Amino acid sequence: MKALRNPRCLLLESRWFVPRHFDGISLGPIVLLRPGVSAGLIAHELVHVRQFWRRPFTHGPRYLLSKAYRLACEVEAYRAQLQAGQSTPARIAHLGHYLATKYRLDIDEETAVRLLSAVSADDSPR
Image (cartoon, one colour):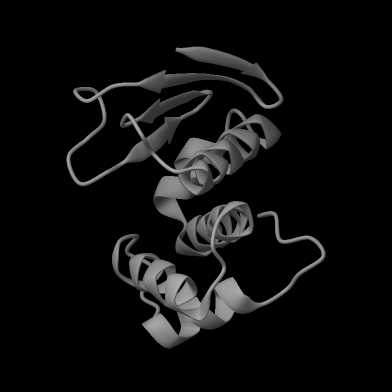
């Protein structure tokens, strides 16, 4: 267990509390991680914590109900993950596949890769 100040959150490593098919998940200011996850995945989850703190009362419902908001959140998080680790074309394609298939966003892999490859001055969700 580790408490962070920026963003304010609690990181918990556990084999049992992380849902199946996930290596990490953010639940507001609590991040559940499987032991041994990459620095990139931790960076990804910390972006979700920052998103929560930007809108603590509306982030969860908006993330669940709005595909556009969920897409903006995940693109921001995956870009942070790429910055923290490998940003090779193969890695971008791999994460693009996840973005296109795991979040009910109705986008294709080509669009996902283009979004992850794009450079933006401020890509935080509105």
